[in-house]
Amino acid sequence: MTTTAPDSATARRLLDGLLPLVACAAARVLEVYAGDFTARTKADRSPVTEADERAEAVILEGLARLTPDWPVVAEEAVARGAVPRVGDGPFWLVDPLDGTREFVARRGEFTVNVGLVVDGRSVLGVVTAPALATTWYGAAALGAFRQDREGCRPIRVRRADPARLVAVASRSHRDPETDAWLARHGIRETVAAGSSLKFCVIAEGGADVYPRFGRTMEWDTAAGQAVLEAAGGRVLTVDGTPLRYAKPGFVNPGFVAWGGLEPGSDPA
Image (tube, rainbow, N blue to C red; front, side, top):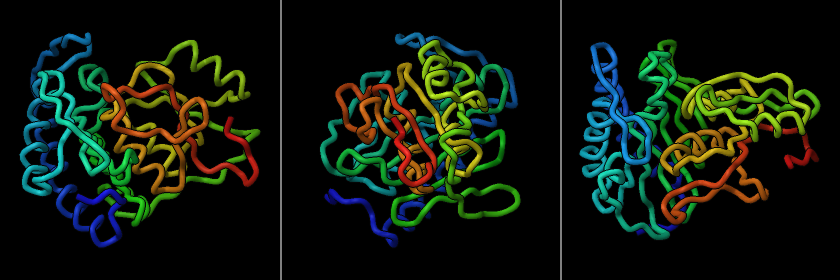
């Protein structure tokens, strides 16, 4: 079992298998979205719908064929108590419907996320927004890309002026700590977005920074972090170290996702 990030040929092979798989899961999500559905509340008080479960089933089945020896940590499976053991080798993190609150409110800003972790690093990821018909994907060895109805193009973070930063903030989970951080850094312009779309907005140059201090899980962030870092960005914890994976309980600390700052700028 490899403990290094996939090279360009391996990353392309994995993405060639993963992209149609995530597209199939997105189609299952849209089938539910187009009709009448109800949301249930899980033990952690987060909502879940039939769309979460249908999409996860598709992804789990496909990953078992694509990489049968690699563990898969999937949100709904974990909620049912199915928690595989992971180590330094590769494993997948799956959020079959990130932004369930946006889904229930029919705002369209929900995503299907699949990220690959090797040696604690998120090294490859796919983020699909079914209602927007758009997919972002990236790998350390390949760069980052946006695919939509107009085709596929490479994306890159923009070079930002630290004195004129634009932040992207959670639409459903914004909190006083985030507002205080934005004020402390003199950031007055913000863009609201749901789910892992926030990482993708920065990756394609639509904003510069995304602070998040509320509770998130590793499956919420792995795919988006992989896309952002493949586009030239960074995701750092509040103490300035890279956000890593395979942590106890798969719980993230607070973090700040950054695009491209000017040389010499300190993202503190």
